[in-house]
Amino acid sequence: MPVESGNSATARQAKQKRKSHSLSIRRTNSTEQERPPIHRDMLEGQDSKLPMALRSNLLDLFGQIEREFENLYLENLELRREIESLNDRLAGEGQTVDGGDLSKGALKTKVSSPFAASHSTSQLSQKLKTTYKASTSKIVSSFKATTSRAVCQLVKEYVGHRDGIWDLSVTRTQPLVLGTASADHCAMLWSIETGKCLLKYAGHAGSVNSIKFHPTEQMALTASGDQTAHIWRYMVQLPLPQPPADISASLDDDVDFSDKDEADGEADGPNECPTVRVASTTLKSHQGVVIAADWLVGGKQVVTASWDRAANLYDVETSELVHTLTGHDQELTHCCTHPTQRLVVTSSRDTTFRLWDFRDPSIHSVNVFQGHTDTVTSAVFTVGDNVVSGSDDRTVKVWDLKNMRSPIATIRTDSAVNRISVSANQRIIALPHDNRQVRLFDMNGVRLARLPRSNRQGHRRMVCCSAWNEENQACNLFTCGFDRQAIGWNINIPALLQEK
Image 1 (cartoon, rainbow, N blue to C red):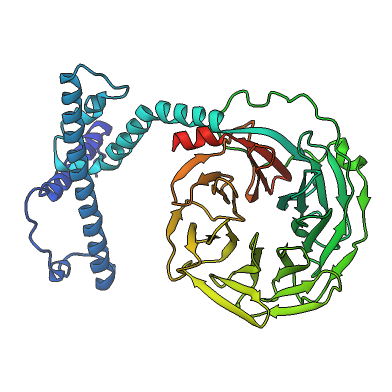
Image 2 (tube, rainbow, N blue to C red; image 1 turned 135 degrees about the vertical axis):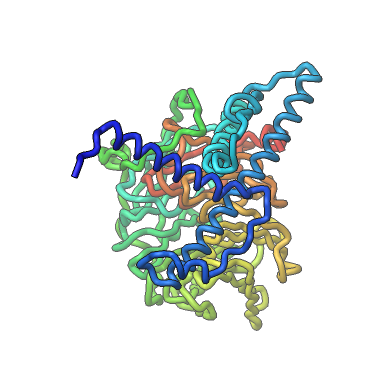
């Protein structure tokens, strides 16, 4: 039998490829025509080892894919026409736009056949997206950087914890200090001005999940994974303020952080500051992790929220359990008290939060708020008759206590929302997210700003909590997260409202 030469074999392979290619073109050349229906009995005469049901299913899938490509192709044709029309209009007005030559090059290339069109649909779509992004990225990033510098400026970092920080709070009376609660079993008090640790509380045997200060006295309330809540007294002396360091050099909002840990070598402050190891009052009636605690107005009672699905109301002076608040179907995640009335809200993994009313000693009414579809991570009161709730369902809802059937505003985000806070004077909502972002909104759900995040500023891991401080004509926002640090931000309210 003669052996086929190499040139002849190559020519035959090329001929077969051209035949297969022309067959594919004929197969897809009916883009603008109505295709005749393909019947299942047409497959019976074809030689294949695949079962008939599987072949029929594959045919259906390929048909769906082909229709999707056709739809994308038609959308791209429409986009190309719109781009050309826009460029013609701009050219008529004597204007030019960076990246405005979208109609040139690849987008103006004529498609020789529907097969080529369907084959290049994904590339064309991606090129459209890339070109649009390139033409607007300079404007958008410049706007964001300018807004961040003008509105939100990082002023101090508080570094010293050995694990993630779950919660933070600011004292309501002088001396003005920042408190942080960490998974390293400690709570710390910091000088807001200098960033120096003033006091460490090490009385818990588990993660410290919450910290709140007494409204008038130098006492702190902490909740812990050791199933207890502690009340402890503190005495601190503020250091002299230091000259502010220039740490707001260059901002780049589009640079992501790496997930590497901070260096384990903490500052000298936390190792040198005094340590309190014994609580003045221990509250222990829960059968699970105490995830949060807060003072009722007046500071004579406290409320705790636990993973045992209950919240407890205690008398501070006697340490006695006054009420057990039950009704949630799953673990509690947070609790908050009203600043001027005897009202409490508790949040839960059961997708609800509850309002408990203790204004009438003989009646303890409860209202259930249903509107979220996932864990309610926190619900907080505002000055007035509003409650703001955040959830793992990536929404934040603003509620009116006078009409609790539906929220008056809904904020939709791109990440789960953690412990939120609302400024008392300006009623601005700060939203810490799982994706390391912190965003500011007003009570109507209008986005005001985003805190800068770059390779030099911001959190490197999930942001857990935020807290406002509006003393002394200043408006500061504090945030904390899994990167073991708390950050103090200066919020320029006039500039923020002007951007709005």
